[in-house]
Length: 82
Image (cartoon, rainbow, N blue to C red; front, side, top):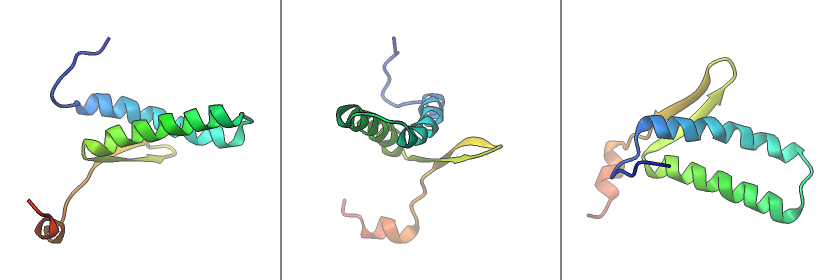
């Protein structure tokens, strides 16, 4: 069971990011349409959790999964409406 918080901690995001790399291997497997849809939906849901918390993931062989903090540049901040 999870302990709910107002903010998802980085360690939880790292666990989710580590699972995302295995979704790439499902493209080579035979699945029916319904199962393929559910797998892609699960991948997109996990990816959106990471992105909604301001991170992106990158996997490099030999280095593992890396969580990168999204950075807004000055021009993006000026274009936002508050």
